[in-house]
Amino acid sequence: MRRIGPSFAYLTARRARPNRRTRSRPRTIPARPSTSSRGGREAGGIDLSKAFVASAQSRHPDLQFEVASFRALPFEDGSFGGILAWYSLIHTPPADVPAVLAEFARVLRPGGGLLLGFFDGAPREPFAHAIAPAWYWSAEALIELLADAGFAVDGVRRRGREPGEISARPHADIAAIRR
Image (cartoon, rainbow, N blue to C red; front, side, top):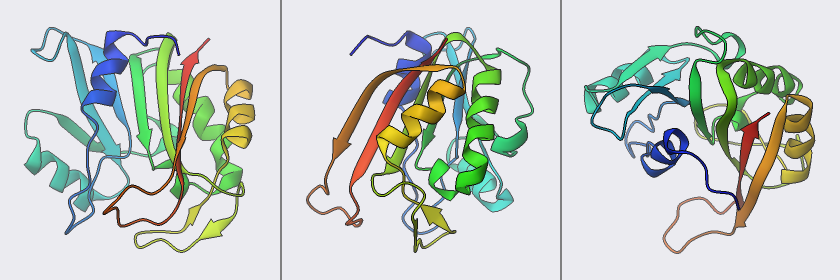
């Protein structure tokens, strides 16, 4: 797998973990160049839920979080070096995923990284989820949609359930680069 640049590496190293009580987690964490102490990158997050954004902001007051949607990101074209969408596309209706990936491509600069985490299964198959409706995806189905949105896939990783993990579902992630 090709090494991804520092703006993306920071995001993957610092991905948000859910609060076990509130299950809050920002849905995407974009990176922009800055002069911060985080290796020259800024991180923040978005979510549709005001409560989740408030929780994330209170737990990480040095980061910026805002209420926003994947479908219409409130950012300029090419303004980010990386996006982490860790188990967040699973809550997007399958018919909307191509438009969301196109929106990710719009805000990423060429060469910017995207890391998608998802539950691996029959593509577009719904499953019960504690927070909101959710769908399985396969790497193969997402790779096709990513290519259509202007991404080159850099790597795919699949993994089963880890000891002590609550979820019994198989996991996968895809790293992609905006062309």
